[in-house]
Amino acid sequence: MENYQGYEKENINYWSNRAPGYSEVNRSELRSGQHRVWGSTLAERISRHYPGRQPEEISVLDIGTGPGFFAIILAEMGYQVTAVDYTGSMLEKARTNAGEWNRKIRFMEMNAEQLAFQENTFDVIVSRNLTWNLYHPDQAYREWERVLKPGGLLMNFDANWYRYLYDEEAREGYRQDRENIKAAGVANETDGTDIPAMEAIACQAPLSAVSRPGWDMDFLGSLGMKAKADPEIWRTVWTREERINNASTPMFLVQAVKGVH
Image 1 (cartoon, one colour):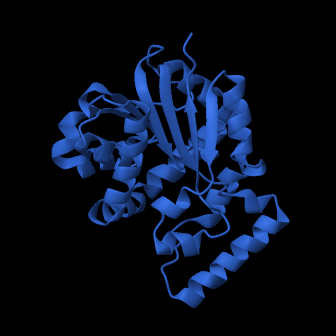
Image 2: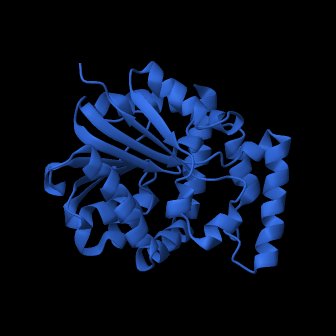
């Protein structure tokens, strides 16, 4: 417990300091074609899972909303959106970024590993770039499955972000990415990031050392969920700049459905 409390404090401090810069990244996405790309990606998969149902009839929980990117585009499309984050400063940015949509989104400060919702509450859960950063990802997945309605859909977009801290091949890929960024003349996404602080956190996060999405598939299966992975989702949702920055660490989608008991 002591280790967890230390990790929790370190993590919240880091993301609190990162909130302004991370918010600018989200604001840029909302102003760009990424707004449409991500919106169509989410909407297409939700509508395929719930054919014939209107967005207004579907409740969505955005876990680890950060500055609110997913929550905002889902609210714009008419979904009933609840968005949670464990960092108050991130939620402040999310509310500001939401603008007129703020009144359509229920923002709540909450731990992804300890959700304060009744079981069988949401039709859909979405998350992006969160699970790698959790101290108890297994506990988080149990919670997410608990609050999903039977037959509900989970979509988790993530990557093996800090695998290079443990794997030599991944480390070489990360080094090559840095060279490719310079050669291509694109912005380095890590500029302005406290890399040593982030790596110190990642070293304590268990998913940094495992191969994903294999781990996710196995664990969600143990919960009785029907899970599948799309390791090529990055081809749909990433910009050219993101592809160059993260060529060795492609984003994957873990999609799972809660069993109907």
